[in-house]
Image (cartoon, rainbow, N blue to C red; front, side, top):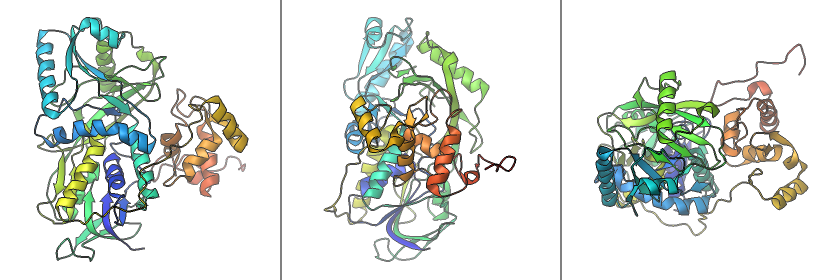
Length: 487
């Protein structure tokens, strides 16, 4: 099946989804083309979810231009899109005079980048703000604007809002080839043809937001040649705490912000992340990396009970070889192709501003952006049974008894919430897709009790056999077949 659009966006990570949501307000036909079978299956799911404030990037870089602005926009985006966001503030802990000098450099960086209310504080103030911070810390950079999100929840919310406003989502559609027609990019005729297993996609303009695949898309389109480096990060998740930790950072290194300890919007503690250059696609966890995380975390929070680990995972940051910056703009080689490449850290924090910047780049390149009269920026958050007030729980159960049938006991997720996650547009088509939308399987048992029931619900809702239900992407079947003739 062949589709024709004004704009095709390659990649349904947080960057591509944010851009789709930003552009959905205009009278344009837009398609998001994703290689995997769901939203945010690359770098967007494999990070700590920190909304960095913007004091770390070097002034004048593209990162610096979008980081602080993205952090600022998160309050509005969370309100409009209904995802969880906590702006707790953060501290970079220093332990000696050398660290203090580095903190002052970070403060000056932040001031140049437009980060508000940065200050160097004493040990007494540190422990007022975060009593569990190391007593050995003598100073800290206090940044009130830092926060955290679930990055995949942001991407899902943004794309759901975009789809509700007319954007098309093509999943399981890896781009295998790109044909570029002659003529100007502003011609009404389609300039780009994307060949995918799900059908060809024709578009006038192409936005490359393919994460770790961005270099391949650029190459296929005959545009800039660059190479992606797989800077792998291991991350550790601890069980929920009675009180959520504020993000605590060490003094950063030239290539990394170091081992960070942070709370999450659901009350877990995350230790993030190592930074090692490894083979592309390597998502293995390494004992040496995990030990480095636990050691680094205990330096910041000495009483952290690292026996409470419930999950360790890894992902690769999309780093462009030879630069530590983002590449956002129109291709200098192929008119009509727009690049959003190299979106490594602070990509989550910058996503709303990257979308805003891409809109401006399109406008300056002559793309007609006429606002739609029926544009609706609001996405109502789905019901979260675990967090709902008692009165709302009773109302939901009264409306459908399946709201009272708890499937995931760790996170208190009922059957009806799982069904809703599957039926949303775009909805879950795998066990992990359900998990990212409603947390079934996110708890301390990590699906030990609920996975079989989630598989059964998916099979029923998708109209397939349980043996066809996937854990994650294509090929990740969970069920081999009936046992002893019993189905």
